[in-house]
Length: 215
Ligand SMILES: *[C@@H]1O[C@H](CO)[C@@H](O)[C@H](O)[C@H]1NC(C)=O
Image (cartoon, rainbow, N blue to C red; front, side):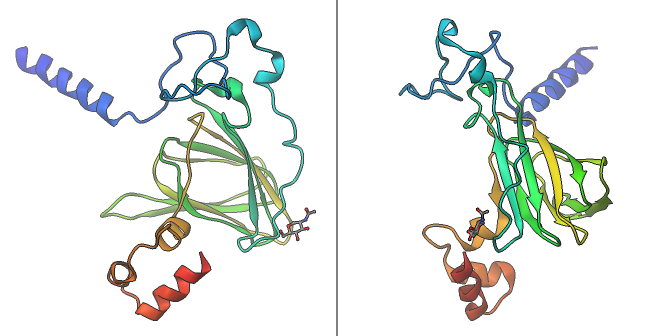
C-alpha cells in the first residue's frame, strides 16, 4: 500500500516536471499591458476596468500572406503579441500560406503542440519522433483534413500541389515560440564554430561555410 502511494506520488511528480505548457489562469482574464515595465512569466495585466472588446480581437486573417521568399510560405501569427487578451490563456492561432510546392521548413515550438487544418489546396505534413527512433510520421492532407504536431517535435509542411494552399493552426501557448532548425543551427548570431558543425553534420568545412552564408 505504502509502495503504491509512493509510486503514485512519483508518477505525479514526473508528470508535473514534464509539463511544459502554459499555466492555467487564476482570474477571468489578464489582458497584456504592453506599457508595463514589470517582468513576470507572461505579461502583466491591464486593469480590468480599462479592458475593451478590441483587446480580445484581431482582424486580417482573411488576407493571404506574401509567399515571395526563399521557402515559398508565410506564417501570419495571432499570439499574445498581436492579441493581448490571449495573455495567460495558453492558446494562439496562425494562418499559413503556401505557394505551389512552397515549404514551411523543419522547425519546432518549444512551448506548444499544434493542430492544423487545411482550408485550401493540399499539404504534405510530417514530424520526427525523438532519438534514437527518429521515425518520420507524415501524411498528405486534403482540404478539411486535420493533423497534430506534438509539442517540441521537429515538423514541417509542403504544398503538395500546383495551386496555393492555406492552413489555419492553433497552438497550446499564448507564445509558442519557433525554432527553425536551419536558421538557428546555421544562422546563429554569432556563428556556432564551423568545426562543430563540420563534425555534427559530417560535412566539409566549405559546405558548412556555404550553408552559413545563406542564413
Ligand atoms: C511580396 O514580397 C516581395 C519580396 O519581399 C516583394 O517584392 C513584393 O512586393 C511583395 N508583394 C506584395 C503584394 O506585397
